[in-house]
Length: 473
Ligand code: AMP
Ligand code: ZN
Image (cartoon, rainbow, N blue to C red; front, side, top):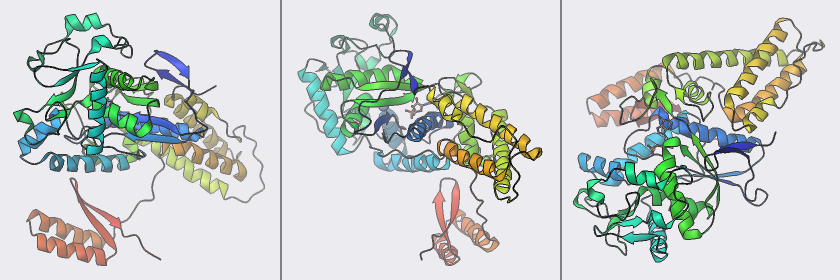
């Protein structure tokens, strides 16, 4: 079966035909986090789905160039900085760092680029795009000095969300501060400065202000990946208005088809409702780590259901993830042992030759449940064959090679456990006490002692993290 994906734009499963795979990598743009608080595991469901997508494309021999933006200016980040009485960049910095720590824990591959919306280079590009839209009659400055996109002038507006504009007229809500728009659905490209923005402002031809969220993504995506992108992803809540607006802005400027394949993942739910900050029904990664779950267990629990099906978060689900990984670990240990045997016994089992079923399941719109189902069938059958002594060392090796290939996509293998020596742990404990008492001098001295024992200590939001010092030579 050829590689195929469900395209939100057409609402159909389509064969994947990237623009020019021989000459350039597959370009993928993913909407990244808004760094006003720590991301929750619902957000990470989206990023894990995107990770799976990238890894499967790579397994199929494609090169991938992926960009994930960081939204570090919007209403929420500005409000947070104002409430904390610190500059915007100081407010967002720890959340950016936490995001990178979390993706590492979850083994999510880093994008090739993480452009930030506040980077002057991209702000210039946003201003350039807005100017082009105004000159084409696709945008206008309203009496409130903000600049809006004129959706009536873009006939394709609504095609991604399969949305009828007349519905917008009747059901949309008018926000009190948007009374001077021409159409209720017109969205802000440039938000004129107001007092609430404090010192967050950039100069523009329309006066001081800041970019709207939608134009940030259009500018960063086209700046780094060109006018036409192979795949654009996000969660289903991004479809409207965010991605609809990205299409209108980008195509309004370039005149080219912005994205070939739109892929959206369904939500992580809690008791049937979307996990979200606003509902307060969320867990962060440190919440789950504190309960004793590991990064790979959480990765598994967020990955195992097809990305277009809603996934309910439950503690039973976490336990199932743990059991599934224990089974995999035990199977791998057993296979490794078998592969080292030197007897000349021949396999009589019919599970001696790995097949392509895992990859083929993923070719079918990333059908991870089928791919994992197949993997567990293999585990069951090879275990049974080993029970009966029907699997020889060569077959065991072949299955280990198969697993290596499969694990390039899943990335679920256990890491060798790092044992922290008692002496190091003791000094770290003393240091934790010193920090609690705000005795920074002592804390620094103890850090040096830990270093002398060959360990590095990092202070994170979840306390100290110890890592073995890299040895040179
Ligand atoms: P945000 O930081 O709110 O812009 O969200 C970042 C990404 O997470 C977007 O792609 C959202 O669509 C996605 N997202 C937010 N909540 C959930 C959820 N409960 N389940 C899956 N994805 C989500
Ligand atoms: Zn975006």
